Amino acid sequence: MSIKPLILLPDPVLRRQSDPIERVDDAVLALADDMLETMYDAPGIGLAAVQVGIPRRLLVVDCSREDEDQAPMVFINPQVVASSDERSTYEEGCLSIPDYYAEVERPMQVTVDYVDRLGKQQQIEADGLLATCLQHEIDHLNGILFIDHISKLKRDMVVKKFTKLAKGRSTAAL
Ligand code: NI
Image (cartoon, rainbow, N blue to C red; front, side, top):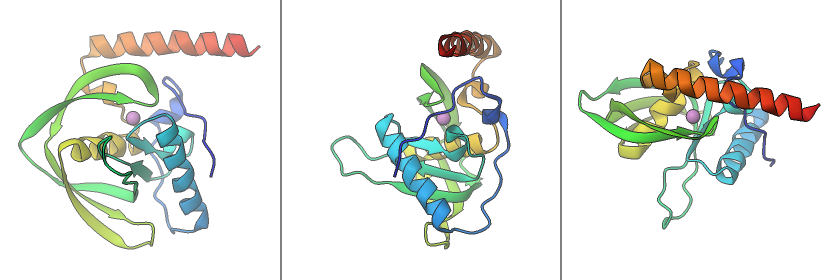
């Protein structure tokens, strides 16, 4: 297992549509393990493959509380198939947009179809933090970031800030 470098805003790969995974093979499982290690190291509660530069439809999530055991979950080709009318608001962040948080409103419950590590089709009914986390991560697979759900004014400010930071990083690398 290894920790992968995180792709940050405004890298255009974050705006790509991720490709479906045809077969759950050793390479996919190894990538999922690397993503879990990367997520725990960050630390974060969810990570999409595109955030380590691999635009494929794979997510890892762990929404367990600090006082609980780790509960790593792997979702392959996940898809929201139903969502509640009732909505909830969470303050969200993203490992690709470090140290920025904003309130986002989303459906409170979602039903998600996905393929598990064994290649089996599964369905989960999620609510609370897990529902928010799954929607945030599935957005990543479609090139959508949580800042797309906030006001244009706030979004423009964040993108501008991270564009400036990215320029600083490339200069420092010379
Ligand atoms: Ni994110």
